[in-house]
Figure 1: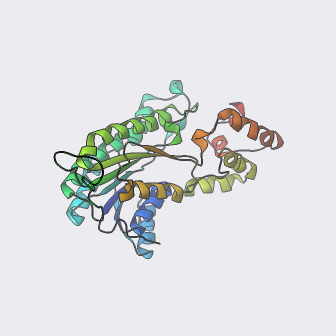
Figure 2: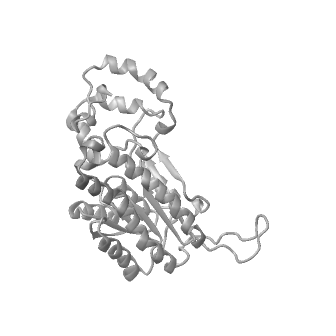
Figure 3: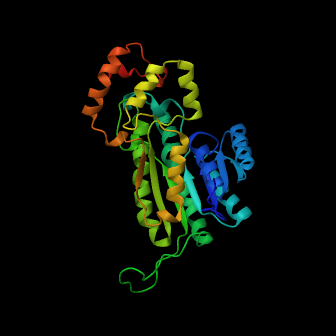
Length: 316
């Protein structure tokens, strides 16, 4: 149910046609924001816009490649020209290709490495580069209260700026914890965290907060289909056992976190990376091995989606 917390605000969600981005676009729209979905997949983008509108929300599709600067300028211009403001930017576009997941640094071509980094990092830079001035021009976001100046403590000089905008960058648990075989993905997601923290320091004084989210194993539409095709319940259960909450994540779990960080309730939170991973990133690995070894031994034929991608976890 909508709480109207983003009524009158305009949000841009990159990679918003499906998966985490799709759920995020729906959540922001449900809570009142006009949501601009930026994606390359026209069919799925149109479907998500229709889904939002059928639920009473407001959304539109902007087709574009987020690795291109003209997409960044275009999506921001769309928000400003049609709606007169930009309040929220969620950067969620996800890379595909050989360089994203395949092999160590010795097994990746420079071209593939750069292609992965263009989506993982360059797109985040470009989106923020053009969104920040638009947020500053837009002024205080509708529904955000002014900071209660002087209510607590002693203050001198000019009051702090009102809340102007929110930027949420999508990192990953791979930005916090590293794995073999995915150097581009791990390095790119770690760099997103670093850029997020720098931007938080840079733009906090202007009323813009910048945070990141580090999702764990999230069962998106694509991943759900892959697990179903594999038809290996033991493999799926193996992934559930990795998490203290004993389940994998849903796109809506991440979308709820994004909505909080974009809300006025999060006005004193910036430069933070929020893990939404069911406790995975805080669990001691020795404890994990002890809990899972019997299950693995009892299910010698288990497979996971990593097997489909050419990575055999049992050799690690």
